[in-house]
Length: 439
Image (cartoon, one colour):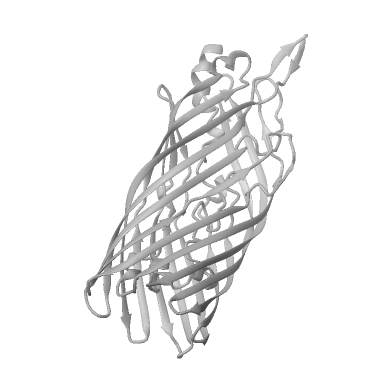
């Protein structure tokens, strides 16, 4: 049995962490939509139809006809989540099926975060404009204790991305602009999970040793593209954009520690590669000037989460495909801007954002549920050409169930199925402040 187990453990021990790049951000799945401070105030409604570099993430055509402008914003994301065990089990060789044990409740596995963004645009003659934006669209950290009931699936998960978008826009008529952008996206990830050691006999008694530990880290760059169009029909501004999926390949290291007995030969570090795809995003937005003071915004966003179908891990001599099978989702948002005075504008909005995680295979690393976001905010102009934006949002997560079955050392006599069952509930508060300078 020993040689067979040794050949299988390198990848099998990683299965528990195979949903490595997903987590609970402030949009469903692992996408962070906090890319515009003024957008937060109206629950990100109508962003594809608004003008200026603050909307570049949503639509590259936003800078067509806009003045030279610099935008900067920062978001504080303060989640509060609770993840409870509901009868999770482990089936070790020789030993009867038993509870996984460990702490049955995890408070706050999703950590607080800061999300910055920056953009600038400038006209080039009468018809063209150039823009540059820097965003963090997939960015989160979750952490469980090493003795949590969720340890075989997740201990620490961290994903940071930086997206640098270079945009060119062409104003083809006074009312319509088309644009194309190239995106360079850097991703840096670390994840870890426990792996069960095999029962052993000590002094004539069967003993279950402490768990082993696996950590995978890597980083890499990938290129994508975004296209958009924006125009005006009567009193309605309309915009549409498409952001491509990116096929990330992260090169790094897998580290194995505390493997015992027949598994001990796997201890150490080796090169590893993980590949996954981010979703494509199609956005349609509109802004209707209902009165001289009130503008109504509506946005529908289709997110191609089915691109995140699997994560592929390559350790050189062994490979593993971990199915994810996320579902495409449709997000809908409605909001209003109201100009109280020429220098003060207020905002409010609501957004429904369904989770892409499949009900039959949801992981504690992805403690996700359908969401409702309620936003308020505003803009103040203290001096000419300087605008200060602020926003506040409350995000409610619907309670959801965790259902995840993993077999460690599958295909060997040491096969150890782990069935995780639990519930997730929570909410988050998002605060943001930013500024725009026109010159």
